[in-house]
Length: 347
View 1 (cartoon, rainbow, N blue to C red):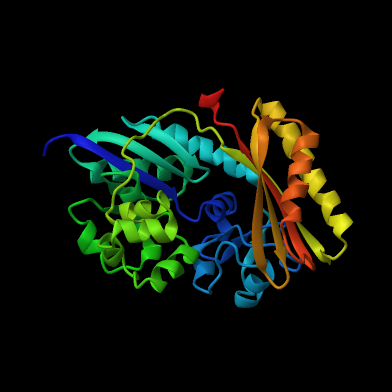
View 2 (cartoon, helix red, strand yellow; view 1 turned 30 degrees about the horizontal axis):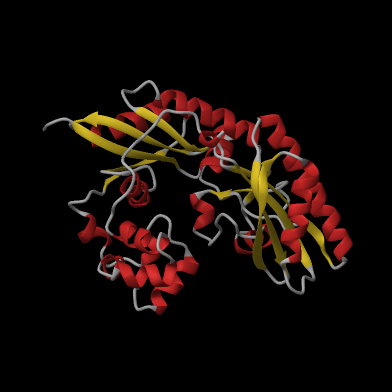
């Protein structure tokens, strides 16, 4: 075999639950659910991670904790311990850097690896062994010609496996799968594509770029076809990850019906974000407000600031302006504010 460039994607299986099981070996083999305070009776908290044993009962990330308790009453419910997970994540990333690869940290439980090798599967398995030996955690590794392929391949490899998905095998593996199987296409976009008769990856790959541009915009339309063709970014960089924004949100134990009270919460969230942006030396260019109303409908509205700023008053006003763009807001169960940072390269 000849050496060539590969992109690998590593994902730590059932990460938060796995960390808890490593700390409490007596939980091994039992359904474990991590989320909130660990009390499934607490209203409006959701599952952060579920072990594979819990997933067999239909418990998954984002599921209300109360629902998880009904589906799997024998599960062990634990509170999320972010500092512990961050510490384990840092150990895993350090292990990866011991290998002849470029490590691009993508999140607390995943990373892309750039490698020049003649046997990417052997490299992937060596990495899996090192992670397991030194942390007790299992991971899945996807291999591809680009990040898009590698990310999707990881899903085929779960749990604790290795899978290769390349341009040569893309059509055979992905062609008949639904468009939602592509990394970057969510349920909403999948429904819009289905309305156009584009239900499979192959159908989307053969779609007319002009028609897609007319329906989804001149940038997003062709990009959807780009994904369906299996294309993606090939560069893996070790540069530190720089956040493009930040957000905070609050879920209320009772529905809010008083608008001034909603505005007070939004102002507090926006002011907190402004202070954090200033501490990080970043400036906000856009403010997004998220509102979730009963029964479980979530909507967002945005306001673009006239100039990049960290001024709390300006960011708070922007949040209230975005909030004013909602119609008939009542029975609010969640409020959130996010700010988008000015790109560092523009400063």
